[in-house]
Length: 408
Image (cartoon, rainbow, N blue to C red; front, top):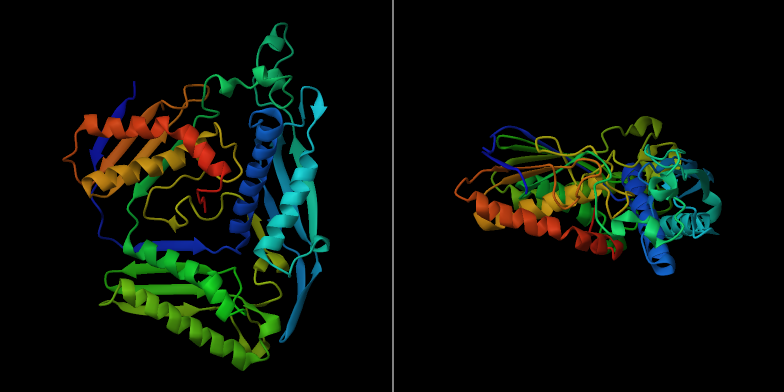
């Protein structure tokens, strides 16, 4: 049984604040790398041992390197440090798993994909902080060898993988989501995605990927502030740099007017620039990760790609969590599916909250709460949608492993 609470949700006509950290932002890089680590490790163990073995890379972090930049050129002079924090199964049936090889290959492939021809192996330093210690529950008491915890990260066989028999929640936690996105949210998403698109980069190779967008709407006033790096080898002087800023501003205003044709729209760019002292957002590779900035999983965009402070959101670091049973990942994704389905059925704004209890049935949460703008929808209809999407959770796992879901 699912205990469902339904309440009416009124959309507040109040100021909106929406942020997106672009693909090259250190926090987004940390999220994307952690998810790549989890996915590659999962696929390896699934192929070689028949199951996704226990792991979590959701504490992965990046520490910025150091760069030397002048007009016309730039290079990394100290490596980007990659902190591999978390836990991982290191053996199966007493045979070692090559987890470090998986990590090394994933890290190098990831950075070369994100920064083609700009980051090499010598520009990366991997620091391992992995453990195979079990969560509380493992004891040395007589009879503990008959349980699962003792062999959580060193399974003797598939019989030591309990989720193959029944999915249970790994934690007591909450997942939440809402639908649909508002106009300002869609605008902020579109700005970053267009500026970081392959087509825009092809026409404007000087544009870096560490693009941050903050959108604000107060009544009919829409304000957008952007930080957009420029890649030094394509910029000969300050005039080039300024011309590119004007180009971006015109591009963003045009996009914004498509969403808010009757509103006053203002755009601010690289507000920390100081031209008299040549303190500019001029970079070697297009990201602040090259020059001391840090990134951590969970500090950036939520699963819909945004940080919307007027909307419900979870503080869980979704990326890098085990895709089979980690509530902090699966309940947020499931809540989003539920919210979108209910919105499609009712046409009204919807919020969904799912709460688990550690060790209990993953597919039947402890609490499910739905907030509706339109209340003309029966509880029976709501429960049918919720149960259907909860039962779909194993397919969310499959989609994650095949890279069919975006998490940030």
